[in-house]
Image 1 (tube, rainbow, N blue to C red):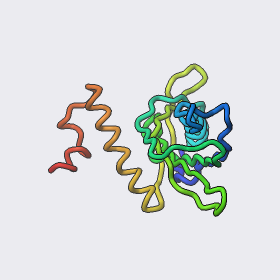
Image 2: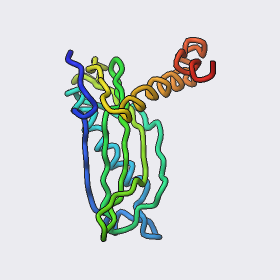
Image 3: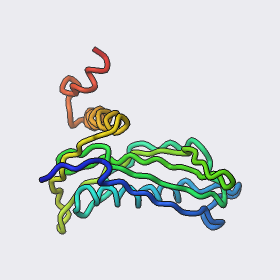
Image 4: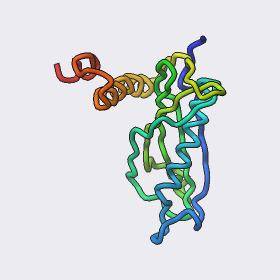
Length: 169
């Protein structure tokens, strides 16, 4: 199986915030943003694996900034690391200023997807090779996040979490 770069999975979705997607104070519903991020992340994971993918977890979501009615919102998703059958996808959410066209980061998230066959059984995915400094940073952090999740779920003993131990010793 040929390794791939994060750039191979890049997915960019741009859309407008409409009235039916906002709360009583005219900001995008959080659930609406989660759905948009899930779609973008699933496309990125599918591009990396070229398989059917299912959402395994939403590991992190930061709603740092409200997204007002009428905003142009761009969701960028890239696979940050792949494991045996799973892929971590990092998402950045941007709001475009209506007048200047400049983009400001509003939110970010990390999703995990698993590649499956037609019967729903996990299948192997290609290795990811990070290229940029940011991709390398996210790639390295992905292993720490995975080890932490495994320790918290009781699927890994803390002393086996080598990447986590390296942070403290």
